[in-house]
Length: 145
Image (cartoon, rainbow, N blue to C red; front, top):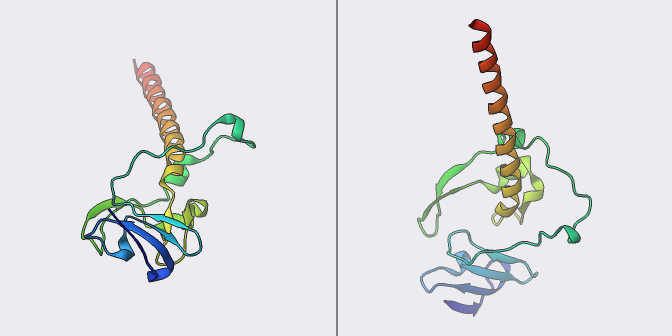
């Protein structure tokens, strides 16, 4: 891992592997204090503050399935490294979930961690739809007998 000063695109410090360019480094700290971590490095597990005692205004997520259906998952190749990956385009996510996107044009990021709760609720909504449809099918079968 390399650590150095970097003035490219407002980065103050840069961490990365020797074969990475400074603009696509593993991690950089901008001169305005924003930390950028690229999605194509192997990193340790991240834990998020999640204790109930630290939260207020707790409400269930509603219409998760409808929201998820508005998102477009994509495969892509990173320009700089030619590494193939999958995910979302930040500008597309921003149209549906602006609170999940940060940054300026050319350096927008998606908070994938927040998507876990939304996806969990969407799966639960979908499972409820499946159970309801299975019940309807069974009722139709019973009525035909």
